Image 1 (tube, one colour):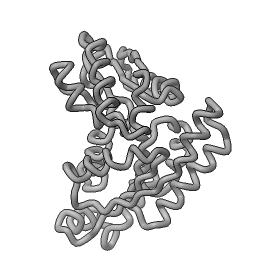
Image 2 (image 1 turned 30 degrees about the vertical axis):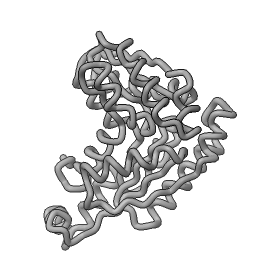
Image 3 (image 1 turned 90 degrees about the vertical axis):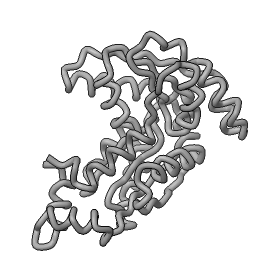
Image 4 (image 1 turned 180 degrees about the vertical axis):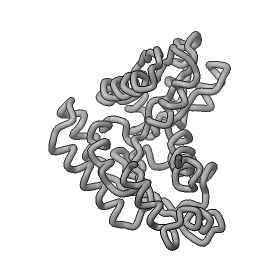
Length: 249
């Protein structure tokens, strides 16, 4: 049993998980979620996802944008970065958060090291990958931050192997998209991401790799002619499911 599951069971009155979830569902408990960001442009998309899917949650934002700078510079996930990711997760837990959601996709293995905490700790893409694996075998992913691609693809393959799925993933890193977003040209970002979507038109599912990329979902849907999968919506839905009891076995 994961540490956080045991903690939830113990938090119920008299050890009753049912009472714990009942109180949450009746609005007697405020659920705080720590959102940990490595880029400022990830804040708005996850805020929008919570507003739509789980407005009752209390979200706190923790931002260290030097992480993305250092990750791009070093081109690898260093031990020092892993320690920083764990420290951020521990800080989020110290604020009283019932769950922690990382929003930057370039730090997967480091986030796994933070899963030792006694609350759910979600990687940004795990819920989206789970949804993709139910969609079919050929998965296409549109990315905008190249240093994240290798670890994301490995995470997907590991998840597919654990589920005995033959699914494969193909990634295209959209040139100029992240630069446009950081420069404040959101329209250009959305346009180039959407224009790249049809290259995966024959795939079973198309993913927008990052929280920041999700803002292009509507434009990509229009170009593709069907919905794409985004990480903020998938992650919020999964975390809500876990923390309201429906995700527990």
